[in-house]
Length: 372
Image 1 (spheres, rainbow, N blue to C red):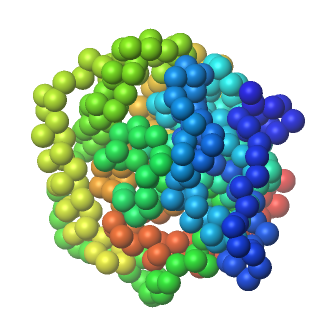
Image 2 (image 1 turned 120 degrees about the horizontal axis):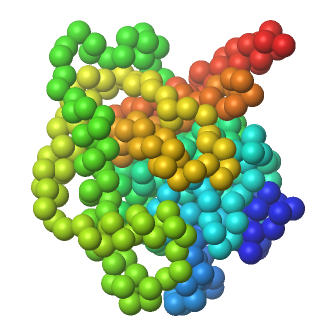
């Protein structure tokens, strides 16, 4: 069970240490946590639900994404709470509790990588691994006032990660500071193309945000059904109301219009590549507003999530990489902006964020001091 002394962030604590001496390795002395969706040899991957935990055996190997971080010299201290079956962006789990948002305790932490974001925001670890299918790293990062990185689709191995919807699933990172830029090789080009937004003089046929969100939702439901429909139908797990409603909708999904949704993905990626070129960056709000309050009524919360998915679906459908960057507080609530770059430009984007981050931190600090 999640423990309140740890902000309710952890499912269980354990130590996974580098197999060789961590000295002189890039992540030496850093600690991290992992979402309860990653396989760890000898532990059952819980996937946010006690019935899943009960009906699955312990993993016989550790996910490559986790092993890669261990080889870098970092130490894992445990698994974190997540939304059931990764099917929410709110961070509320009726079985294991809602991790406490360290930035604004009366607000939801965001999900489904809720515990991972809270562990970082509360400074319980230096960084954490999560997964981002529809927004599950970017949303909790923005709500908890930390950095959240969704890599290009397929850039990081998802082997040993329980799938949610594999054509969207990514292994993401949650951080308090811009440290990832140290471990990539690409050089940052002139900021001129960044500031101009790429080939802005051309016209590009980008589908409306509502169409993007609808296509993402249908494909995600369809893939979730393929992955887990049989287990849900057989076990009939105890699910929270929000999750139960979404899972039921997924089980009713057919392959009608799936081809059209894949065409939307193809068209979106082509339009964004034409718009941004090699070094253009798209800047958008990560989410449409501050984190909702705890125990917000379901209807307005769902309406807010629908607006959020309109923004989140851009990277999800295109496969582009995205970093959510905290911009401090407005009316004492966290604000974030996101930068997106074309698929495969992860190194460029991370280095750009690292280059800008020190300046952003200084500007935010000045703005907050002068607002009092």
